[in-house]
Image (tube, rainbow, N blue to C red):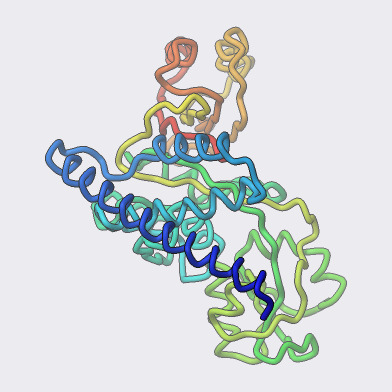
Length: 356
């Protein structure tokens, strides 16, 4: 080993010792903050504070470490620090290695306690009963649209949206042998199957396709039956000891799924927020125009509108609406007040930081 290389490595070792010392110093401050929060009965988790930290660090970063890596590093630092105050329990649509699990880990870091649930309704129930601090559920995909089960749950649930997570989705076909010819049946979540329909038609024509509750559950089944090929994440292949037959089989490469973090309280204003609400109107000429006009008049950007039929009343619909801004903004409050005049039912689902 050259003298110069040895000196460089010794320099790195010294920096690592300083980093470790500073991390523990930071942890001691976090523990003291946790005591104050307990005494003052404040929430342990503060998404707006996390966003503030990320933005400040990115503004200070001069490289060569990219901003994305800075965010990943400090997400884990904050996750580990938060676990010193109070380990967060996060319910998600399971089992382990679903894309929802990946989204939950990306948002909360690896130090949370992640609780897999079989159904979206179970995730809501876990948070409503206080068995989990937060839940993570999928709400829409760029190619396949809304996740109806999630939207329907908001109609009756009192939970709030606390944050959103955008996750790029890359799907792989996997089985026990890694050979395409061994597959007699393909299993996956309905959205994942739809996202790969052209590939399946071309490479596995005539093979039965079976819907499962999640991509990871399909991987579990493939691990038990050599005739089943699962469409899931590469993480699922590792988790369930499967071999990849083909990577990136989705029909559209620019494929993202949006997830929502749900909790019992909303989030404070950050300055870069979204507000979600749902409302019901009767089917009548010009009804949709009248309810959207208050937002257009106040130059409020609507980022999503989705309708669902009300199951209790014929020919009435529930609309889900996302807009830029926080519920405390004057123009948002004014627009919602005008909207209430046109609606038979309205519910604010929450204001929360926009995904970065």
